[in-house]
Image (cartoon, rainbow, N blue to C red; front, side, top):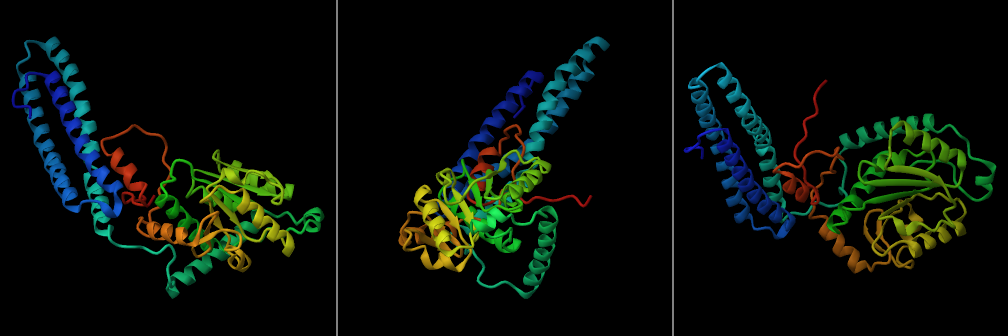
Length: 374
């Protein structure tokens, strides 16, 4: 590379050729990552070796480029010629530096690839069988703090109308438990390759904290509640969080006709009356799209899901209009995904690593993120 370079235009041409070569290699690795447990580990290893060599060669390329530039500038005929030359080389050098910034991420990409290769034949359960005493104590303390925040943000009492209609007041499931269910449902959606539209609904959202939390997992999150003052509190929270992808609205869970618009529906006994909650469950299941995930962490639904035509994936996650055999199949596939919950990012320019990141994130893997101390 650059052995026959005569000027900055030659450098730009070489950079473009190098970038295209890297894109081809990275796209081939990405295609293997998309195969998950069926990937060819030997092919991945060979491709990574080629990328490693290319990244190393690029460092030598930069040194040769700098040597050519220094020689050109030393042979400039006068000051004006030197200024013009530096201007021309400036474009080439900027492009070289930008590509170097991209290539400097190779070590992060390599670690992410190696983790997927090592995990391709392993299964990670959707729920841990047993939580350590340390983790249990930490979660308990965190849940108590979350309960305080929940009470502070929604200080409205249950209305007489809501009580007469058989609704429960705004009683929240422990936050740590809620996230376990969200995480399990998220991984099932990855297994189902439903990553384009990941929409969540909280039936009986109360003050809206669960709707806000669900944004960490899904692209859109909504909440409905019978009581308008609860909806107002939820909207206030979402507005303060600048959550444009989340909404709260007033609706009756027994008559709401939009359940088919969501991939994940969460309900934690929003209705006190036994007959009415069974009516609500039936309406949700009948209205939901086939394969929609239902998060229902209470005993009643665990006793009735089969007769409602649902399959139990695992824990409190169920699948609407699905046989138990099919739900078991999806659980096994979901256990083959990684455990990373991809952080939503602002739109940014595509890089040579974009195809690899996209394929990996769709399988539950991501690069290690280092949070600054300050």
